[in-house]
Image (cartoon, rainbow, N blue to C red; front, side, top):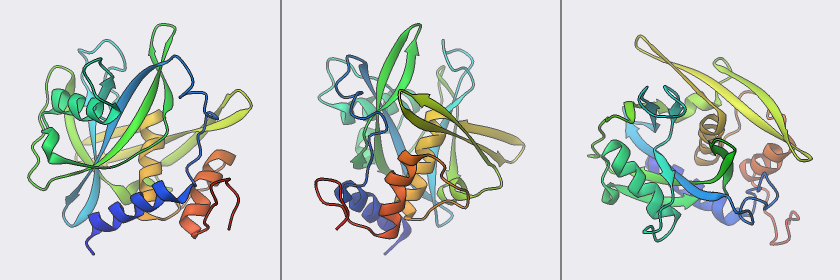
Length: 234
């Protein structure tokens, strides 16, 4: 089985395993936050699985120059969050919707949506066709790939934590060098890159996962423990 199919199988197993933890205790789905979606694209380069990322341009209103996934707010015309992720990806970096095989969706995360507003951001994981074409525009200054394994390494990683209610949540930071450029991947993007690497490769990182939500989310899945529908181990 080739590397992308291994990742696909692991992602599908994770979706069925019952291990995914809603870091916010279900409050996001029940909230009135406006919905948004990001596409987490996987592709093969030099026989290795990569994650596709973008650098936001200096012309956008918020998060100038930051590393992110393609995505944006859900519009009334979108049938669901998957269509939101695919539409926004096409608008931002030109990848055709038909060039993405959607593999899974994850529980939403909370992100700042503007002044005094928040978004419920739904991650959509997809595999890109080998001949996909990506481009830049006024919103996106760069499109680049990072090997998936990179996000499991300790050398270029650090982490902090913050509190959401009674829950301690992580913030992961990665610095990736490519040629003369250094890319700083952090926040929701960093957390999702780490999650994708752990789940798709079914491997724990070389650094410690310090928060309870991550330990619940990842350790059982990687170690092969099954859960019942009520969350207890079988």
